[in-house]
Length: 520
Image 1 (cartoon, one colour):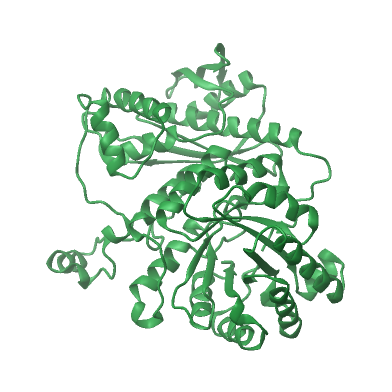
Image 2 (cartoon, rainbow, N blue to C red; image 1 turned 90 degrees about the horizontal axis):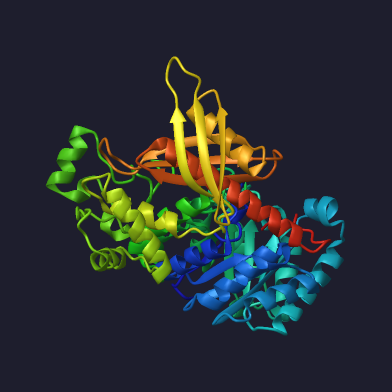
């Protein structure tokens, strides 16, 4: 049996199902390019039938990202599979990933189908997908709560029908490692023809066990692990791929398996996903959290200074944490700026470079020293790219302990300057109300947070916030500036632009698309 473990990244599909995450086509492509640099084997770019926007996003990734398999998700019906093939067909290595639930609870309450009907649908779906491509993956949704006898029957039949990968998902995060390991071992031993397919697992983190379950599955025969960067996804999320990759790498003595991942790209990938999704990484998050390689206790500091391995089992450089102290300033030129971006792993178009360089020069007039972290923030903000219905032109604030906070805002829409003023409980509230007056969209802010990107009194402030209009869909916004009120205004306008973009996508969505079952 092969010692290679394939990495299947579902950040752009399951990860985007996280509440408040809605990626534009350009944002999906940017993340997919970085995932390819990371060295994942398969990118699940989306669920093409769910909306025209998702279809175009999958198609753009398939067309533009090379050197990796690009998969699209499809329910076990012919229409979904046809639409998925249309989206992925231009990929160098296209894959159709089709699924249907196999647990009795899903059959009874969600599908309202018999076991015989599910078996028939699964086989028909795989055969139809095989008419387009040899690379077909079949998933038995809610496998961890399925009757093993029926699951073996379904998997045997789908392999016979032509599935090259069979995925065994713990859809609701119900499994625990000891039980799950035995479950995977049973599948590998009892499914006829299993030697003709790769066994995959897709573990959710409802009990905090997704990574542990993924690793124990590998030890019992699985050779593909599905997950998302930073562990994002439905509910409590997916297995964090950076943790799976580094566990297999760091403990080769225990597992004896390897991946094709370039570990030095892990941190940059994590930062990009966090930025574009608006989902912050907790400081103590394994591998990529800000504290993952931090040492405050005196004994620990002393030990690390004498010998790093006393308290660090991984070298920070191994995951891409640079120790560079290179500082750029207002006298730095465009060529030096471009070279620094290339050294940091960023690949920008001429238009993106021009915008980023202009932003860099403006910031350099406010800060004496600009660090790599500042440059990362600038580039990530400029790489976004839901189309801007509105852009911030200017902001005036009147606030203090004895005055009513007032904001005067100028936004541009299609080149026209629109201006309004509003009062609020505080300056940020006043800013949001003024923006609402201009856009004529009444939004509710459900979260607001700020962090300093770098140290010092002139540090860039990074504001992330989330808004909603109907209490159901949530939109994240991000803005950076040395002025936290300007950063707040940028973040709010960014979130409103995403809301407008999503509304336009909804209007163009064909009637009758049911996207409620895009879960594995």
